[in-house]
Length: 633
Ligand SMILES: Cc1cc2nc3c(=O)[nH]c(=O)nc-3n(C[C@H](O)[C@H](O)[C@H](O)COP(=O)(O)OP(=O)(O)OC[C@H]3O[C@@H](n4cnc5c(N)ncnc54)[C@H](O)[C@@H]3O)c2cc1C
Ligand SMILES: *[C@@H]1O[C@H](CO)[C@@H](O)[C@H](O)[C@H]1NC(C)=O
Ligand SMILES: *[C@@H]1O[C@H](CO)[C@@H](O)[C@H](O)[C@H]1NC(C)=O
Ligand SMILES: *[C@@H]1O[C@H](CO)[C@@H](O)[C@H](O)[C@H]1NC(C)=O
Ligand SMILES: *[C@@H]1O[C@H](CO)[C@@H](O)[C@H](O)[C@H]1NC(C)=O
Ligand SMILES: *[C@@H]1O[C@H](CO)[C@@H](O)[C@H](O)[C@H]1NC(C)=O
Ligand SMILES: *[C@@H]1O[C@H](CO)[C@@H](O)[C@H](O)[C@H]1NC(C)=O
Ligand SMILES: *[C@@H]1O[C@H](CO)[C@@H](O)[C@H](O)[C@H]1NC(C)=O
Ligand SMILES: *[C@@H]1O[C@H](CO)[C@@H](O)[C@H](O)[C@H]1NC(C)=O
Ligand SMILES: *[C@@H]1O[C@H](CO)[C@@H](O)[C@H](O)[C@H]1NC(C)=O
Ligand SMILES: *[C@@H]1O[C@H](CO)[C@@H](O)[C@H](O)[C@H]1NC(C)=O
Image 1 (cartoon, helix red, strand yellow):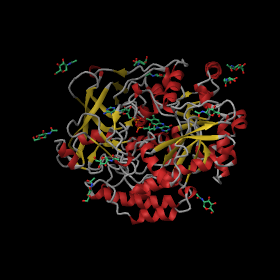
Image 2 (cartoon, protein in one colour):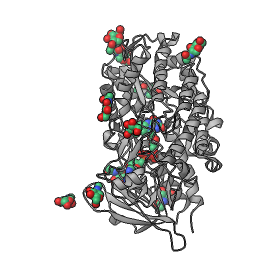
Image 3 (cartoon, helix red, strand yellow):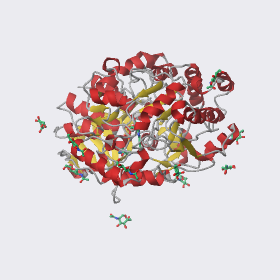
């Protein structure tokens, strides 16, 4: 069958077609506010950001305390477009995402990249690809190891998070027929068993080539665990979609945590406003510390001035890893050099705010699978009969190809599966001084924290039970994501315009060991297609093709082809002690400020080897318990 030469344009066209298909009813958001005149003058809790984590915490707080008021301030709108509910393919609708361009990336030929994060009620969970997996036990245990005993004791490890993973989600097993057709495996007791608001399921469709690629990975000797979400996220395995099995529509923070809670009289959601700063004052005459007392908010549209809203309990930051650091920095909490450059007076010097930025670099190879069994996934782009049939099936029965989102299987490989020479990588790591590849101005506490991360990563690279590369089995091409990069970026306010979008610098491949590992990683794709099952698909490599042969060729190709983000930004307000460059304590409170917590993806100290949404929900569920437990009378 014919393949398209421009995969990106095809994917865009594909998503556009899909948006025309679907119709469903959206429940009312009865208490939504669009103007400050509709607000109370004070709230018990104010949450900055109505995204994945913010809506989770707001749901739990409004349910736990019917007499206490909660305000969520969200930059985007409560969007009722049915396209959001439809299983996503790959490219999110730009209307629901911030439009930010990164700094030129020195490790990627000085290219700049779009920084895509959600700008809508539901945040990134409204636009993500619904791949709903978890990292391995070792990935989360590394958080406790890196942060130290106090954090470990507070449950910042696998054992402490598993109950919250379970609580956050309801997993519905696939039908016996789907198990038979697609070979789905799962183990509810191992990983699920909760009845949380976010729905997880396996869709009632997979392309015929999926089974063949999964087999190809097994022919390379890659094990296949029956269930990966119980901490065994290494090997080739199935991962569910965050999707409602009854309707085969997206399950996300809005459907799970907002719609069912929207009529609670103690719950206000203000849309179209941004939190600019946290109001931080002195805690009291006796207690000389700082305390968060409210927020300043401003309408996104028009040029209204900032308004202050006060809180009686806590301020909770949930603006995501790209926007939470700016709120802190504008409030005088952050690295003093960054604040001084922007003429912001330093209230609390906290060097880690906006540093330790991590994401998963990603690239994609493209193949013409000349003997792929029919129907071939890519035929959806060219065969209008197939597309029309798929639309009819989805509309009538909620079955068929349009129930598929970003995919439900992939190979997640430890370093030892990529190279027999793990020793030289680990010794290169050991030989590094933590300062060598971080920006020159990096504060020494951050260097201490990074040294602790390098020690943890050395163990993870030596382990067979922690993935370093992900190979999603995908409709489009052969992507690979680098799950454990050593390079660290920054997200800081713009000194010439602190209220503007932040300066984002991924710094991908600035640590040269990353590029060495990425070369090992990318070569696995050819090995997979060289297995008997891989060959049976008749693969002809289109990108990069035969011209790329040697490791040196691959290095050059990667520097010009890798993108810095698999849409998983984390780490910019890390759960670590201040002495290690951390920003929040084991209770998620910002060091040195009372009544101020962070609950979003910023707090992950080390990026786990997984898509990040399920971890964000688990952390937010744990955060809600902490906040409820600490409530003042
Ligand atoms: C395109 C894309 C695809 C992805 N695919 C997957 C996937 O398949 N599987 C997976 O597990 N994960 C995926 N992710 C990642 C995952 O969705 C995120 O890690 C997670 O949702 C982040 O949650 P959060 O609460 O930290 O932030 P968000 O969900 O981004 O929430 C932050 C919210 O704060 C709002 N906000 C920002 N600044 C302000 C401000 N100053 N004042 C008020 N509001 C503000 C934003 O509008 C947003 O709604 C994807 C992400 C994207 C963008
Ligand atoms: C893919 O292979 C088929 C069959 O050999 C051929 O007809 C088609 O042109 C190829 N497509 C591309 C994009 O190379
Ligand atoms: C979406 O629907 C809700 C409930 O009817 C409504 O309050 C809200 O304004 C709608 N959103 C938009 C952007 O129109
Ligand atoms: C990137 O920019 C830096 C600074 O301007 C320059 O030194 C370097 O040579 C550039 N690299 C590439 C690959 O263009
Ligand atoms: C909200 O809706 C639920 C379910 O329909 C109902 O039981 C509850 O009484 C409603 N609450 C309010 C405050 O209207
Ligand atoms: C915004 O501010 C500018 C300058 O202060 C003013 O000219 C303009 O009318 C304002 N616009 C609105 C919509 O208020
Ligand atoms: C298009 O898809 C239909 C339905 O699967 C199939 O019968 C037909 O052969 C396909 N056409 C081409 C040109 O591949
Ligand atoms: C929907 O399901 C029914 C019952 O199984 C079947 O007869 C019908 O053909 C299906 N519709 C489509 C479009 O596949
Ligand atoms: C490691 O060495 C073995 C034995 O020589 C070989 O079969 C295997 O392919 C090698 N693995 C990698 C990842 O290179
Ligand atoms: C950091 O300092 C070293 C040595 O002083 C210098 O060579 C290098 O160019 C500096 N790097 C940056 C990014 O400023
Ligand atoms: C900061 O203050 C200095 C001295 O008052 C001034 O020159 C500079 O323009 C200010 N910068 C910003 C970003 O306001």
